[in-house]
Amino acid sequence: MTYSDDPMLGGPKATVTAIGADGVPITDGQAIQPVPVALFEPSRVLAVKDLRTTEIHDARMEGIIGQGFHRMPRGLLINFPADGWGLYRTATGLLLRDRFGGVWAEGTLSLDPRWISEATSQGWVTVFYGPHLGIRVPPGKTERTYTLQDRIDEFRKGRSHGMCASANVRWHPVPTGETLNWVLLPPGAFGQPLPLAYVPQFNFTPHGGPETFGFVPTPETYSEVPVALADIPIARNLVGDATPTDFDLFQPRLDPGLNFVAGYHAPASESIDSFTAWQQAAHAHGRVLVLTGHHDLPAGPELIHQPLQNIRENTSQALQTSHAAIIPLTRASRLSLPAWEDR
Image 1: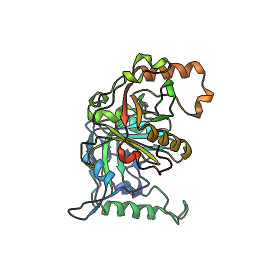
Image 2: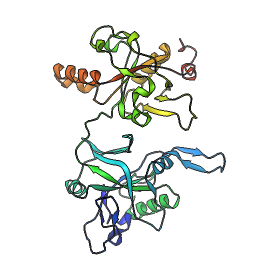
Image 3: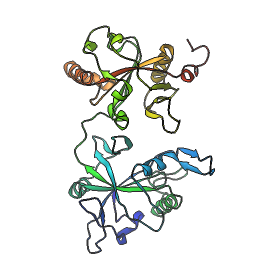
């Protein structure tokens, strides 16, 4: 979080001094109120090679530009609105979402009240996205030795190499009530035999919603034991792939570059043994029960400190408003286990 008069962005001489009601920048040299700015710097580059030109690109950078952001080269520092995009305040920081509700970046940080006030007043925030924004301290440097000039040089390098995208996006000061959290549960959850994945429903919105893939409202018998899987269909044109660190959903009939629907990556803070056990159960059954909804599904060690009645009510709300389908795993995924694990 910073402002448009940050030395890294050009300092007080920067020409953009406000954002109009339509998201278009205002370059009134007499205005002195700086524009609120948010910077998201991914920790890794997702490199892809264009087989026609042999050039290497960052897939996420090209993706965010294709969805409405603008490449920010050297010599030009002006931003235009990205239709439908939003920057959301969360309980722990900031969240960047595209026009379909997809999450592109999330930052955990303490929010400055003055920055929040200015963003709320203007209704827009200038967002920069790229792997070379001068935020992370590089290897061999410390907070003390990574100087302001080093950060400026890093930011300029990213722009020179086409690795900086920016846009003005709508500011949402009230945290969204829609869940953003995946939940993976072992076989036996809710009295049914399959490993279960609860997927935030916004992942399916760009594809027409979960009904596009044959999902149906979760049967009312969810509260009974066991759940009748006969009431839940196998998804249409949707399969899963469970790797040692990820669980992805994709459309098998589309080209690899276009078939991704949603994915979960086991965070570093999560016990790898927990995800490995879930992955092996998915391989053993060859399929996964997927539920998708808008509400948080209670799970995790923090439930120890919550009243049982609250857990039951929140679980009921999540399941009663969710959709369900059984997702088969790809043959390649099932055969990816070592021989002694493939059962």
